[in-house]
Length: 209
Image: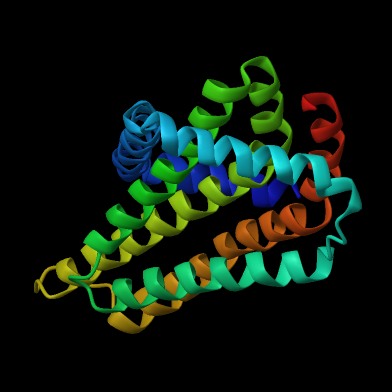
């Protein structure tokens, strides 16, 4: 376990510049999403609040199938992973990584911003217990996968130069291995979203009502 942690830390240090760039894009997305909440009309906010209130009222009576939630979350994450993976293989498709990370930040910023805006302290608790746990893993995974994709693309472009000795075969093997490893973060995030988050939401819903 210690070896894996050391490898991850070394990987982050080696690619710290790419991590900073993608982290900035994520932060811009989060800020954009949270600011967008203020652009909603009173009617839009009222409709969203009404929907959420009804959801919280009925959640204890709902049959939330954790397995279905897990598979749905995993399916969505796998689609994102496939898009990023293919964009990496296309070499010049790496801007898609920027778009995906921005959108992930935007959704996170909008959701948490709306909860806090409408429910105050209760919205903070809802965000912490129902949104943050899986998103810590999702963001960590997507950032690392994004860095892996960018590193692969830049390395392939460098390999076309005569003085760069690393072969394309070695690059793609490293790309696939790193991609699969960081994809585990999204798998664990889906497990949390399917089997833990519904339980936490039920608890917080009783407090919000």
